[in-house]
Length: 273
Image: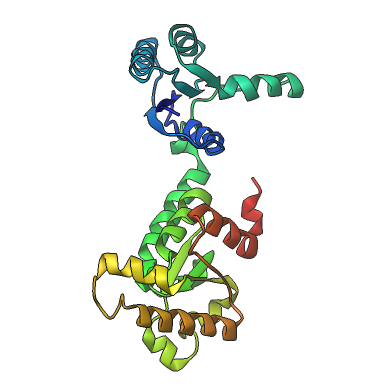
């Protein structure tokens, strides 16, 4: 199949359109050029978007696919009437039927962040992000009792991106604590973690993959050597088993899958909105 251009158009950030659109596109195996057009909130910007869509149609020789989450009807009409793309209007598909079902009118609010300055949940997320950054890679043992979750595992097993994802998406205060050779020599959890065992979740990884990741950072070092990685992973997993800590392998899992598993185990109520 020839290249198709996919547009994600929104009068806000475009994250919702892109997330939803990609979830659908992942069901199909084809080459696509993704273009996000955020903050398309005026008729003039809509005409600019139409010109881009129609140019892509001419160059590709195929109709572009256009995902929109546009609230402004005038903006949406310009794109739906003037573009040569296949339009998939997510609000029209879902919001209007829900209005009929609920017998309520949508508030037509633009974007999830439009009331950020007044949102308690937004403030909590910012606080959680700052907390997670301050407690990254064992930088600080202070306030561990205020952590919602403490991630442990060997260096480069995925703790930092997971803790930041939990903070950004769910407002969780996530600390992460690397397990190092000194911990393996003691054959027990670091003393600072013992009082907070109920909040601890472990991450592990296949040694071969760990070696690849570490070689990108410190090539040809003992730190990245496969034998050293095998030793660290084996010791870390043995320690977590002895301590009765829940853990999973990040080798083939996405950040989203890892975070969801942690939430199910540590804070299941955060999966409810």
